[in-house]
Image (cartoon, rainbow, N blue to C red):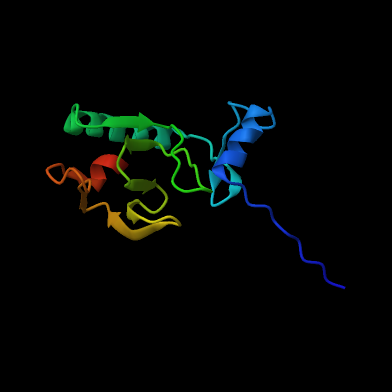
Length: 145
């Protein structure tokens, strides 16, 4: 006889309650992705350097036009609250820097479930934030050498 296992998917509200009840702790390296509590990968030196480069680039280029959050949780939907390396607060655009494939995924046009548009940008391309089209950042600047 075959049994099927049922998996409980958490909401952001339930995820926060786990922290309030000391089941999850502030120093746990986890995030909520599509209802699942996922261990975050360790931050290596290449990753840290990329975060530092992107933070510096955005702070210089955006000046005081937006708040740049660094490694803070962002509620994207009722069941996802990742801790992205960088988030420009108030705008629903997510850049995922993929160091292994030397590219950046740009997620725009959020819906209740997900993002409707995902564009992949390679090292020889540039990225402009949707709401700040006057700003252009080379993917190679983010990735470094």
